[in-house]
Image 1 (cartoon, one colour):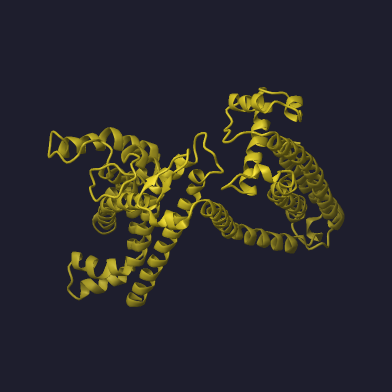
Image 2 (cartoon, helix red, strand yellow):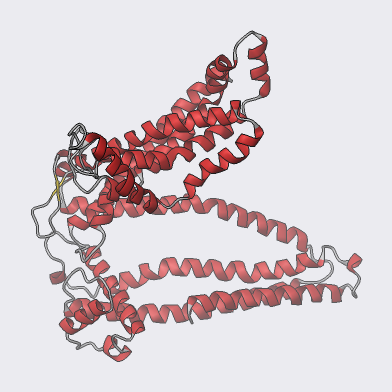
Length: 487
């Protein structure tokens, strides 16, 4: 059974359980709602919760555990001869998984039949070509051993999905029966539902923590694979970025890290002053009519897709800078793609992140602090500079941090505006690239995902994670310092 229909079936059982439990509760009270411990809706909600929660919880756990179990079974089918030098069993297993997914897609598109997909003696060259015809990424040679493992993986996954559907539906039915059996007029349905809702809220709050943990563990695992294939001393010690899927790569991170920091710095030079001054004007000087349209107009910038900003950088900002600083101007700039091009476009994109949050935090400063300053004879500008901004500084630091994190993670503006050159230079008129842009380039195309040139993307991602974590710690230190001073 497809996953969507399985979820629809569970929801249908929950809806039926709600109606039946509500009617059953009223019937037990002889139709008089005053004889019930709880409102009828609580009895229905109790039945719906007992149907949905156990079934969907098992469904989620099953979907997480199934690939791990299937992978552990199939891993034993991979002979040691398939694990080449510089590779590992996990990387070969990832190739097998991609082959299995590609076969599923090819069967769904009609490129091959199910019988051909299950044929253990199939010609691997013909099968590889059919996978390519189906638009699937084939990153390495599909050997007979990998094909057999992929076919076994498909069979195990299909069987596991069928068993999962049966187990989930049985749990939903059992939950419905359980809820209906306890539904009677003296049952404390309201207390049960409120406890269940509290548990669901705790689970929802835990998702963010578990998701972050999963992301970090995934990055750490793949980064460790990369450093087993490529020495960490070269990754952190080399000043050259020159990947080559044919071998002989130099994968030094410093040119990419410098490009990331440099372009982000230029963007913040544009966004922070403009955004902060706009926030001060809107909160302290602008009238209600001006604020009513100026603030939404600024926030519209946040809703523009980044690809549009990239096109703006390429078609507008770049040519303007070239006309001013290029051959017709000062002769410093030799192309439209440069650090300055991407930095200005990214800074414009970041203005609402700084202005909107700063405006909100400045407005949150108590009016009594302003009145006290005015009472001591301070002017409006002095009050803003010496009272309002210091009191709002923790929030402003948070706004700048958000803008910084957004700048570090930007990709499309960099690709279109700054180019793809990995270099160490202080010249803002030269093309450069960033960590995120190279992550995209290393993980797209018909690349060998078992190679260091592809796995370096995870090491780059881990470096970005550590960088943003350090920014958060630094910002927290600044916020606490100034809170102690002004509170």
